[in-house]
Picture 1 (cartoon, rainbow, N blue to C red):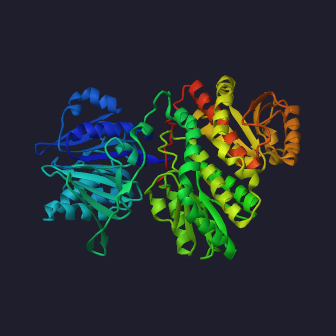
Picture 2 (picture 1 turned 45 degrees about the vertical axis):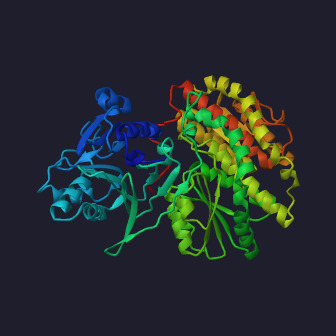
Picture 3 (picture 1 turned 180 degrees about the vertical axis):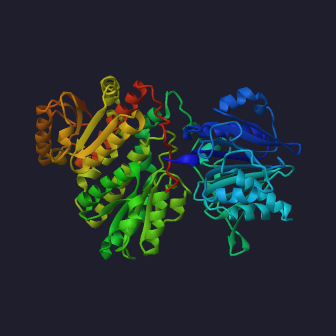
Length: 610
């Protein structure tokens, strides 16, 4: 979930019909959320700028010529206001005094007030943004006699903070780029090249990408891509590898579905099938790192945030149940503060991230590496920063996930853990036959869950939408399912929801239960756990709670039962099948309340600010 101006989107095109390609690509980035949009285009050596508060459609309505401008170079931006109100003037691109330098920027410039004060003696500031200091700094460097590249690099080098910057100069068909802790990619085409905040924006133009790393600068024209970094005061060329991203443009469209979130929930059958069929190429390296760590008696530590943290909790249970090896799970934002001391070279950190750009995870990984620990990442996006900073990578290849609330990537993470730990279990003689027998049938089990729970989730949402608070509980491997179900409900419906270990209800949360309160109980196929859940459910019902059970059979007394999959499947599969009705329930509740589930307020896809 991006915070602040990091929710913005950048697109740049060096090539034919630049204006339309920039606009079309910006539309794909609308899922990030934004409140203004703008574009700068080079037409016969002159720079034309159009920008407006509101949506891209509002920009097109006010300036219909943007789709017909053509142009040989262009940059565009969707802004989420942080420094300065929502207005036409504060929309990007931001210009220098002369109007010949245009800048778009994602991130936050920490020292912008200091720079602004210094520059305001000679330069006229026309916006309230922190971005404007970049344009005037470049202008200042040019006036001192520097060339364009030197001026751009010198200006950016004065910035403190987190940023992705794209810049163009009037009369020059080149884009100038810089990155520090905010995602930025270069797309490589035929006779033209591009840049964007996210590969998704460029899928209709190319599947070849170069990832800009922190501290790097780039110059992009229709014919070439050059990348440098500063070593001291010396500018050093960087050789970059082109990464092929096997995603199609159709993956970034809603198709027949009203929202991306619903589409992505229903894609989970195909995602599971694809992981089982195609992701085995990552198995060998992954289990080699795990096995080596276990032989040494090293620690295994999962690091993640948000939904990936819940998946990691399941991963811990799976490691313990399938391989009988202990592991730990840490929220990445807390890791470097409290858990770093005892790591060493025998230890393995399993870093889990959908985007591979989550700032808290990246910071924790860098700290763990300094202690000598090896890094194994489970990540969805090829070429992402996390994948490049890891010793081993398992790409779970769920395809682009546009909806802010993670759904298919959560299931993909669970299935990747299941497949990896089961395969390692087979090789070391662990008892995993009960899992290997069912694993090939998992896609059909997921399909069955989608079919059986869709209607009941939709119907139930009409009652849930009237609630102020909803409580989720589970035990063992499904305690994380309760947490994930609660997270989905609150992040897209804005209804207060909490997940608890079922046994902890009597240690405080039971005070919140009153007549009519909805409690969602996640079932179990373990007889011992089921008996404990039965006691919890009876206690809830005795206090007037309306109990919704999610289970594979008719085992728990409840007011409403959501039956999924088939009775008796191994406990290790339950997190995959039980989360599906909870995803659907959150989705339909949000829609029933008139919320947009793809764009929950204050949230976006990946936290790139610590």
